[in-house]
Image (cartoon, rainbow, N blue to C red; front, side, top):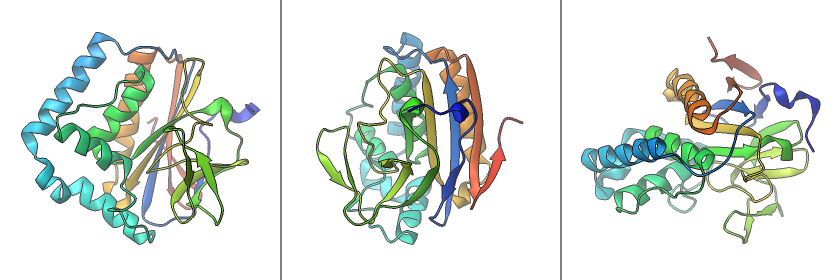
Length: 234
């Protein structure tokens, strides 16, 4: 399923308004257990978040309010279809910590919790261009990572030539990161008001995936407006 252009930052056309998409493509990664140093970074973030706020005050957090507003612009109720970043924050503030899956997945969740925005990381070799961010269509669904069929009709999803594979709520098994993954595509779903912070978050994720997952090369960019791609590599 890999195409020749997967060694370049993929263009993601957005059909939904009010979103800035950060895009990180990491090549030559090694997926495995998180190192002790990464575990320490995750623990430090969880402790800082617990000091900063409580689950009762989470809805008032700036990033949570901005993402909820973005969902409403899309016609999606964020209390019914909760953004993945908010799901992770709630888990941390409930004292459950972040899920521990692998170095790559843990880095995705670390970045999402740190920014408060939804993030998704996918196996690029399982995707086929073109990529588009849009509403799910009538009858569309996929087998979610939780192993049940999940209807995406009316929900925000990223799609490739085969259909929906992930988004800011829940991701599919088809494109999930596994121990055999070597090319990781990370998509950051940030509100437009986030501005340059999206680029900063993408660059920091690129640094971390080099350090903690051994990426041989990292390409960083993003879809800002319509089909305009912004290069964050500097």
